Amino acid sequence: MGMLDGKVAIVTGAGNGVGRGEAVQLADHGAKVVVNDLGGSVTGEGSDKRAADDVVEVIIKRGGEAVANYDSVTEFEGAKNIIDTAIDSFGRLDVLVNNAGILRDKMMFTMTPEEFDSVVKVHMYGTFNTMHHASVYWRSESKEGRQPRASIVNTVSSAGLQGQASQSNYGAAKAGIAAMTIIASLELVRYGVRANCIGPGGFTRMVGVAMQDERRHVDLLQVLV
Image (cartoon, rainbow, N blue to C red):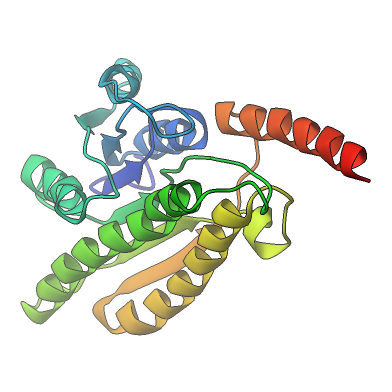
């Protein structure tokens, strides 16, 4: 018996890295998992269903249950479809893990409005979009007498909590997510929903790109100085 037997979880951005690990571990502990991933690059271009499909295959081979979802968290109706995928496939939703993200690192003086907006849209708007639709569902369940015991887990970063050169877009979004999570915990506790943040670490493809960019920006600063 797993500690999450009978629970249904969504993990956004679950095709690679931290999200992939979260989805597999949730399934290993008994949860039925919606593996959401658009399948885009680290910078947000393109799409590929294989990213989500591969994780679903891994979970099933390990004896778990999972379905794939390919919607973008940046789209309000797409986020609703992610929530609906859990309810339609497994009959309920208990856990929402917001992990989807991209990077477009630039120094403040070279970053374009589009590079700022695109990162904020995936991280902060994406987190709001899924939380909104999940909270509508949980509030309805509570009002119908089926009080949830549900959980939201949002992903933050030291870039937002402490600061990181070249990541004003990413850091601002992560700091915003931390604030939204505190507010969500205050608003949703009456409906049986907890909201917390985690700041995971690991050498993922996103971290690899960030480290390459950091080395490049250090070189640029040395030239400027």
